[in-house]
Amino acid sequence: MESSTHLPVDLSDYISGVEAAQLLKCTRQWIYELSRRKKIVSVYVAGHHLISRASIEKYKGNPDRKKFSLKSSRPIDK
Image (cartoon, rainbow, N blue to C red; front, top):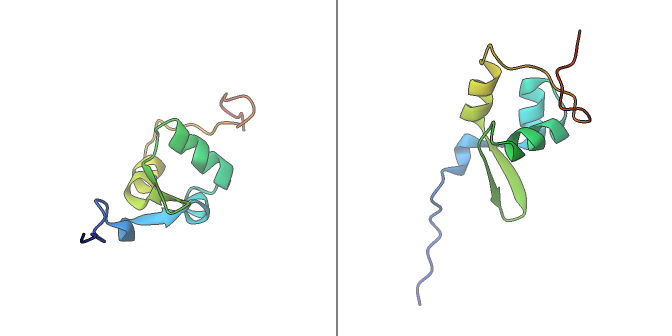
């Protein structure tokens, strides 16, 4: 039986949670929360949670996005 090494996703377009957090200037935990809420695109490959760079850039450029607290899920007043 022949096995295929082709993945349905080009992983070169994905970054780690740490890199995504650096781009958004937030915590890694917040990145995973955004992923859980389906605000950004992510994949789980071989035990690694990878985030779509394009979805981070799109989220970063969204003027309607608000900063949220992980504890309350309410906007943070500045």
